[in-house]
Length: 287
Image: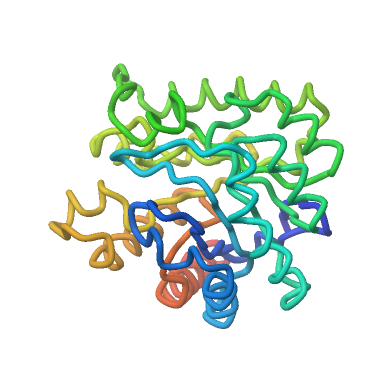
């Protein structure tokens, strides 16, 4: 069975892998402030594991579409470290991911037993990330984006020609080359096309519709569509919490086109939907 190598062992891709989101920020677009207190964040993590999460993704810096403010490494670590330490103790069998663009943060959390570094800049914003992740033999998610932390969730750099997925693939291939040159092993790399990052709704739809082209590169494909603005625009759901059904639809289509790793807020709903869709897809493969 295919798998994705992470720091401690690997995650099998013989069914959809779900990363449960824990935002320990005051300003994330969907749940900002709800889990800023470490104890509440840890409770949420345990809840997501009970609901079927295969791994947990902890983030201490928002990249929301409006008004995202970069934070320094010390503040990000103040938010993330106690959550990571407690989760590692309470659910030692569950892989932990940290969403960060800073090598200093990555190094510190890897020392606390984190297995995956999820970099929404694909190492663009801090080239030292490659060396840090390679040294720890961490799994990495390289996500497509453009601009800095405060810009990547906006439309400032949402300019594409007629082949959106081709441009995304080209930029991700550059990121892969840099990561591998830094010593990151191919088996530890997953690629995320960055749905909603420097992409208008039509761009996100185009990328999802051609996701098989990214999957054909041979790296595990990660997707983060959960509660995003494009889901709201397509479904008419104005508030993030009302976008569960649209998120499920986008995830199921992404699964059909080759995605295997799904970063979600609503784990129970995602687990059930993706498992059913996966069973149907598997029946086609064995028919």
